[in-house]
Image 1 (spheres, rainbow, N blue to C red):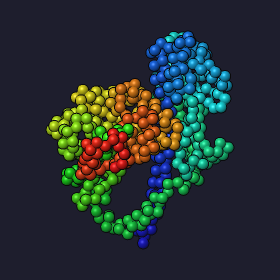
Image 2: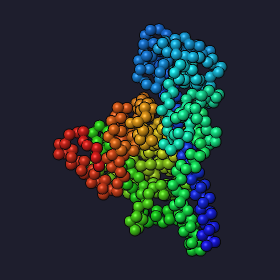
Image 3: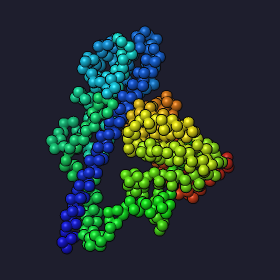
Image 4: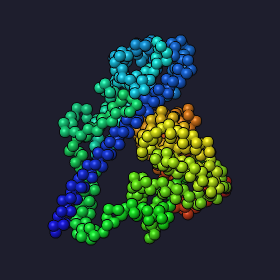
Length: 515
């Protein structure tokens, strides 16, 4: 009874701490998402200004202004482009009538500077809502300014249980507030918990504030299951204490699984959005134990990454996938196989040589292999990573950047890395049919990919409405449960055979997207 009571008290504190930690981590991630969205918008505006400057359009003559208006029309995120003097005063505007909506215009001395000194950001006070100005010098005495509309939907990311008890804010580092989302602007949050993020590149700051009372009941479903586990552990404490595997067991289990070859690839098809035709697949790790039970990836991938076992696991599932898919890859030279690599593995010694040896031994063309660099961990050495990517591309491999939009890379880092493909995170696919700001972000990514000669793949597609919305934004390929979840090889081969039979039987090209 004493042991049960002790574990009960410990379980209470542990469950409470765990729930609070999970809440903080989730809200911290949401704050990061708002910051990344804002950075993408500024990067997109910067790319637009660079293009105009490169085309020698930084003048006020009618032909230049007409060309600028066409440029703005094609980019919905940018509302206006203005030519200004070195002190920031306006010379002319692509849409001169928008000047009438300005309530004020700041001097250059009051603008906030980006970390590299190439951009100046400032608030543009306008009737009907503020906007964000992005200034880029184009000469000694001239500069171009892009006016970005601040859409409140950009910040509408809070879970339903917290929307009425929270506020999301975007501001410059000088305190000038750019945008805010709250259901009730008049409702104060006197006892709020704040989560704050500052951009490493731009003078932007994001804050999410949530009422403590609402947090006390949000995502607390794990409390009673955790208490039940704690009480059970109290009863079994004597047995568990005598077993040394209690501390070292999880990592030892991974080692045993690797030694037995229990980590196997599951295959999720990558398909053309317009036709549904399968053009490749991504392999995902699953742990299939000796008794046939399948361990979900979230139960072992984080431990594999932190313990360094992820490298051996990656080579194990890649080797098996190449063996399984060799006939398909040989028969269809356009079929691509993608696999995930964490940044530390990409930068590890001998990565390129091991990959070449593995693919060569399987007698597969390097151009059919796509290395997906995940953004769960930040690439600490971008120059070295770019060199590795360049070496991979020289040998014929393709490189994709995973989790774009919610990971660590801004648009400038994506450009510097030199990858072939951008993978749009499921977060944006989930909201593309209900959130106009998501559509704008995806369109910006498509424009960036087109400018950098990159392809795009959307992850986590579950409905045909999402397919239509992605096609409208210019995305060509995707993957998700709409066609199939990750499948063991036998079922994946059956899916490929079914699709192949449908095409060879003369079915219409616009096939139904059903697994």
